Image (cartoon, rainbow, N blue to C red; front, side, top):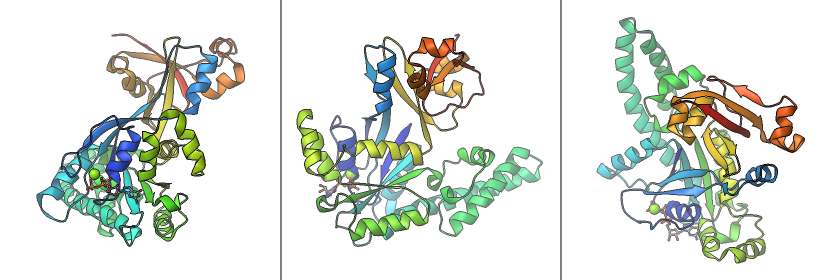
Length: 347
Ligand SMILES: Nc1nc2c(ncn2[C@@H]2O[C@H](COP(=O)(O)OP(=O)(O)OP(=O)(O)O)[C@@H](O)[C@H]2O)c(=O)[nH]1
Ligand SMILES: [Mg+2]
C-alpha cells in the first residue's frame, strides 16, 4: 500500500515525510525523484491483543510513503511528477496554511486541477478505444465505456473522478486506467506553530473548501512535529503536553488515512509476534493473506478469524473457540477492520 505525499512546491511535503518516517531516510530536496520510506502506524489495538495473546514482539503496520516533488510550472518536469503520482495507491495532499501561500483553498484546487486535466487526456483516449470495441460486441468494453463516460462528465466539469458515486463494478472497470483524480485523497492543513488547532483563517478556508467536497482534513504543523520527532523519546511527551497536543500527528493522520483512503487493518497474533496489516477495504481473505505472503494468497485454503472486540469479551482465543465464535472463512470472505486471522494455506 503506497501513499504519495503530494502538494504544491514548498507546502511542507518533505518535512512531513521526515516526521512520518522518523528520519530513517536521508532525504533529497529539490530533486525530481521522490523520497521513499516507511511509516510505522501507531495502533492501540495491538497492545490490547498482546494483553490476551502473550507474545514476544509487537509489530505495527507500515505505510509505504512516497514524497513526490511539487509540480513546477510547465515542461517535462510536470509530466515526470504526474508519472510518480500515477504509481501510488492513495494521496496525502499537503497544503501550506503556515503563511507562504495567500489562498490555501485555491492552492489545493490548483493541484487537483492538474490531476483532473491529466485524467481528461487518458479518459478521452481510452473512451475512443472502448467505444470502438463495444460496437464490436465486447461486453467488458461496453462496461468500460459507460464508466469512462461517467468519469468524463466529472472531469469536464473540473471535478475529480473520486467525487462520483461509483459501484464496485464501475470501480473495477476504471481501475486499469490509473486515473489520478480517482485516487482516494486526504488533505493535510500544514499550519503555523502559532495555530496548532487550525483555528486561523488559512486552515479554516481550507477546511471549508474540503468539506464542500465531502473530504477530510488533518491539521498539523510539520515543522514542529519534525522538532518533536528529533527529541529523545522520554522528552517527547512533555514537549507535546506543553504545546497542548495529546499525541504526535502520525496518530490522527494514520486514523484519518484509514478512514478516508478506504483502508482496513487486520491482525495476526501468536507467541512469536502480534502484528498489524493494512489492506484496502473490501479486500477478500486471500488478498489479505497476500499482504502477509504471496504463498498464502496462492495456496489459500481458509482463514480462521475472530474480531478484536471478541478478545475483550471472551478473554482468550481458547475461550472464543469454545464459545463457537471462531469463524472459518473462505475465498470470498471480505475482511472486516479489526479481524484477527490465522491463514491456512497449502503450496
Ligand atoms: N513555519 C513553517 N514552515 C514550514 C512548515 N512545514 C514546512 N516548512 C518550511 O517550508 C519549506 C519547504 O518545506 P519542504 O518540506 O521542503 O516543502 P516541499 O513541499 O517538500 O517542497 P518541494 O519538494 O520543493 O515541492 C522549508 O523551509 C520548511 O522548513 C510548517 O509547518 N511551518
Ligand atoms: Mg520536497
